[in-house]
Image 1 (spheres, one colour):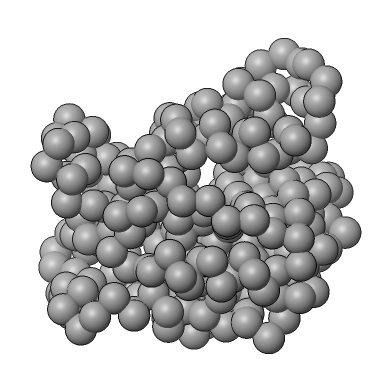
Image 2 (image 1 turned 90 degrees about the horizontal axis):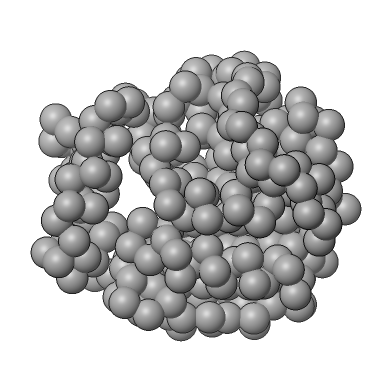
Length: 276
């Protein structure tokens, strides 16, 4: 990877497949090899990438975007799927004239990243899937109590804040109060509508790429937190086994969103993988 100068973050809007304006930002090192595309989980705008994105920008050019209906992106006119969201990501790359990228996606974003590896193998250099199973329904395999608590968030006034609390580990919520307040403030600054969150959640639940994982050609890293209450590590190990050239790593002391709970460790793992 060649060196380069730091690029100030710049933004723009690409036109999504179903009419949504997809807001994106680009920053980090110019002329530093293949850029890294970051794909968000359910809830929260690009601002929530926080320290994870900042650390990656020290080594790579980084592209981030808001899913339809979140952050600065407008709502799509049609129902969404993880496959259609992958096509939206490709439209962002087309807007930027980027032919080849490394891809990192987490949770819902990991499902979208999986489809990118399947649908556009010539455009994905390396693939990193975090906290995302082959089937969306596996996210609901943690027991009825967890399912009901997640579903109950959609009846709350601050849906996204509730979802953040549900996906982060108990240890993080109780021991990192300052970080929790910062996360809550970012979410409250630019909240996503209940309708948009429900549509994105439906896309995640209906996700199923299990029959096509053998079509992924990119070298792949699969990550999951050891305190993830939504997924069992066995689901992610199975995902890694189903992808031809993939390996699995467990991120210690982290719940479902490893980029929020362990941003530095996760960024270090991802950068090491992309640079190897």
